Image (cartoon, rainbow, N blue to C red; front, side, top):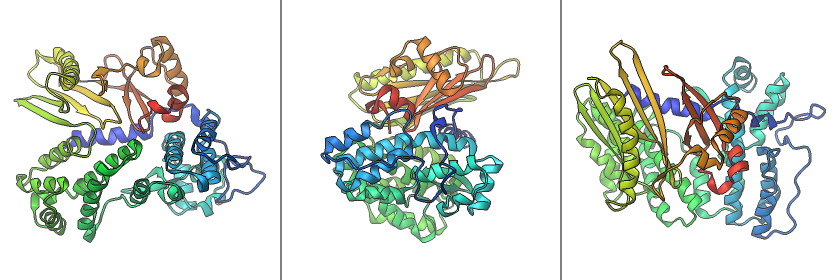
Length: 477
């Protein structure tokens, strides 16, 4: 269990932390000559509404703002100035651009927010929340500008077991409702109430998942569908695992209110795929918590509300352990075979390093796929004859439309030398070779293992930087 949770925790920390990305330097402090108000923006010149309010004109107007100097508060001002004349398509594009430009604030924010001065401003001055009415009371100008920038970007701070995390402020994003489709409005409303259900809310939370099972197949927009599919996985994970895995214990003891409510739900909704999954947990052997986590991971990877489907194949022989991700879409001998062949080849490379040893673990674990791209992490750990612990990892990025692997050079459209130069400039890193990379909905996580160690050198390229280089269509939001 420790290994699984460590992977999840490390993945979250790196995604929201990353390296010291240079582009967040564009975040400017409000001018000290005028008081900082809750409704102020970091942009000095207000953005006026677009006169021609056709769909293409509103989109074109925002596209003209998508440059390096633009910040998330600029995007917010544009949205507020034009939302009254926007269409469904405009609202989706507005949300896409906001998500992209927020990444610099989120990345930078998770680098600094846990330092003493920033935490003191959050906890003491603002009472533990991002309170716009108290931002002006923060004495340090840089810290005050940081929190004002978050607020002006439609970001907020939520707590996970007391840990502050910067996220979208969905209450304020509801400004899009006047132009959004019914499914996008539903998504925005549900994202504002997506946290762990408590006490007697278990049954109604499960009903919300059934509701999603009806909405997802009827959604026409590919962008909104991808958002809803991700929400589905999030809701399932939170309802089954609970804070720090606390709900999962109930499927072993079978004795508390949570378990009773979940089984009542499963019996009441026999046609629901999620209810069927919950019903299957009745057969988990008492005390086998890992079986619950394995079943949850399997359902996340292979359920009817995913674009692509995966399963895990596990093999153990004494102290030899192999876990393999298997792509299960497509006919045998075609695309699936090609994708699985790529994964098998990467695992075989790891196996050649340890085949003479009696004890090792090799795993290929699928990160969530984004659109038609997936990152498969292949890891190896073993103890060599000298008693040294050895860990190695590599990341395999696959285009699920073609089955081909994608190099960072391919993704960025650069030569190897150009990639190294650009990445080092963006991330203030010192890579000498092209790093491994993982595709996520926030950007690219980079890693390069240092020679003869288990230590990796990490970097992060936000979606804003990628947008300016590869364009919106290539981003995985």
